[in-house]
Length: 160
Ligand code: ZN
Image 1 (tube, rainbow, N blue to C red):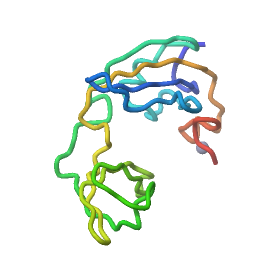
Image 2: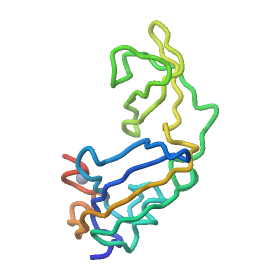
Image 3: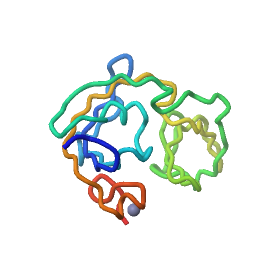
Image 4: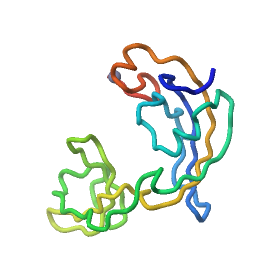
């Protein structure tokens, strides 16, 4: 079965930066699952997966414009430290999770004060050209419920 709109795709990924350094991988857990054709996946990866099928293994280089976006130099904000999740003690360079109206997002700690932490709101991978090693694990038809919700359910997708 080929990956087309309204298919639920499960895939493993390993992301490397321009220096070949591994920055993220799904290999330590379940594959990622998403609903194809609904803007749930970064553009460069979704384009590369289009038309592929289970078992396909390949690599793709993704520019920031089709990846995590360009860095916004003014995206710096002071956030109360009690709103940061992921650690008890914060140090510059650590990545924290903040819950916003748009959902959870990752921020990078720049400076730690007594009650407030100065954070860079850019996604940690923004502005980077990245190599994705991809392996398609499974392709199936989405359920009507998944299509109406606009996302995949089950392992690697949304849990309701
Ligand atoms: Zn749902």
